[in-house]
Image 1 (cartoon, rainbow, N blue to C red):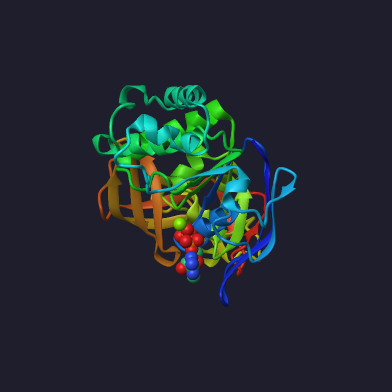
Image 2: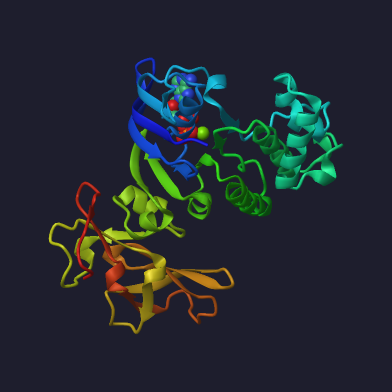
Amino acid sequence: MASIELKAVEKWFGSVQVIKGVDLAIEEGEFVIFVGPSGCGKSTLLRMIAGLEETSRGQIMIGDRDATAEPPNKRGLAMVFQSYALYPHMSVRDNVGFPLKSAGLPKAEIEAKVEEAARVLKLNAYMDRRPKDLSGGQRQRVAIGRSIVRDPTAFLFDEPLSNLDASLRVEMRYEIAKLHQALKSTMIYVTHDQVEAMTLADRIVVLEFGRIAQVGTPRELYESPANLFVAQFIGSPRMNTMPASAVSSPGLPENAHTLGIRPEHITLVAEGSGHLQGVVDVLEYLGADTFVIMDCGPAGQITVRVNGDVDLRSGDKAGLSFETSKIHAFSTEGLSIRFRGA
Ligand code: ADP
Ligand code: MG
């Protein structure tokens, strides 16, 4: 295990800057997730840590070692990709043990490490199968097994679950959480899926155009987003935003340009009362919850999360009452303004 520190790292592809000065200290044993929209630089940053991309400027520390110029195999990190890259002609057992065999370890030692990886990943029943006879989730576990046997100082995952169907993704997400509990290794995990980030991470790093938009625990990002980008990226359905001028409420900061409120912090009340007036546009019934999409005139379209069994129809009028301590205010530049609830 090791801590990993990025100091003012930059990546340039020719004259195009893709990583624009990232500072980040990852603690030993921490599960850190890089999240952000496609193209924001998540994979590039991970590949720089792995040594698969050269770092144009800045420094990468692994433990107390300057690893900036080290080749990948000297860094002691294990990278798990979205594509599994298993050897099709080899059994699961041989796939998992392959890195050890190439390194020339004694047979008994290889067997012990492969058994241990199989136990942690519950692969025992498939050890003699070929990859083609496994499901997508099982193949992904074999790929992870192959990295575990090398006792890496840290694991790097690049969207490892994005090839799997929705239910398998949820299952594998649970297994990766258990894996982190069992191994207690430093893990850096890249995803564009904020739900994956929220459920797995000790800390989330939100990237926007090659810069860190915010770093924090899932709860810190949900409760106190630093800016509009993070506010709207974290949370599902996304935070509602509206011009501050559309809501008349004493106690809002004067320099507020935009207000934000999450769907779960709004209650529907009688027409004529509350912070806003709206007309029901669409109801999205999900069983436990219903998302009510309201047309609120100058405030725009607002989503309200209510109980699944709500009795509403398109065209109904209602007031929207905000939980005032949960209102977010943002400046013209989109930065969060701290204030005591309106
Ligand atoms: P993400 O993983 O967040 O989707 P990437 O790190 O793959 O994003 O890419 C970030 C940006 O860098 C993108 O605009 C991409 O086109 C660019 N990029 C990635 N690799 C290269 C490369 N080898 N040459 C030039 N541009 C690249
Ligand atoms: Mg990527």
